[in-house]
Length: 285
Image 1 (cartoon, rainbow, N blue to C red):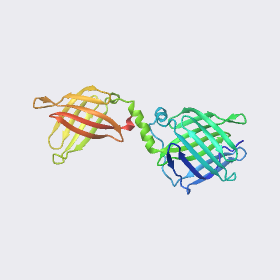
Image 2: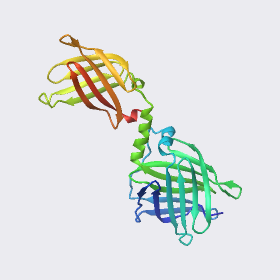
Image 3: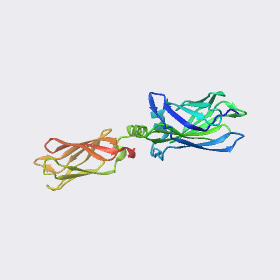
Image 4: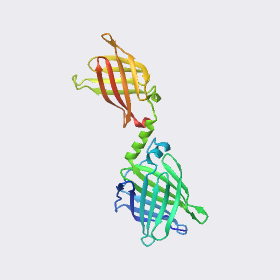
């Protein structure tokens, strides 16, 4: 059987699409051989305890939309087989190919399916009567790299690859693009703004999507801004609020998504007609 998994003391992971992420040569690979006859090996990378994490809330659909077509090249230098080099070319949504400097080239498998943080490959080149297959588990951190390689049984491989945390955030925003504000009807929001015009007075807005807006001020009492009137895709209008003079208060809110709930902007383009821009947490998508 070809040596499809090797242990190494040097690992380099390069994102082919123009991004290079260096792995420190001080990173150590600790290995354990379960059965030298079938070369079932487990490889761990000690990377100074750098945090790596999953991407909570990222569904397979949005992982595929964001990452499909990305290519990675992973090179390992073996300490067991005369310093032979093993290069794995992984294309998300495509396939995995292994190139060796001493035993030829092997097709590990083509894409079969996605999980929320995994990808399965299968129907690769046979070793004996078994077609090669693999599962890649993706995590996220400050750099792109191979965290571990494992062969639980002959010609069935498991890899753990760390992608950039910023890619997790970007992929999750794709889920938000499929949402509309009416999906959040009934959600209560509370945002506070400190005025720079009126003696640092504080203004707190209690907003219920699909409901009412109440403004509480630290210097001028409380006001009913308005009741829900209508939705756009990511906008909401409110009307029939407390009067100022003859004019009932009204408001339009434009919603966006980002990291955390916040009031991005508040303005009064004309007397008692308000416009707000509110960021909803992307984790809510």
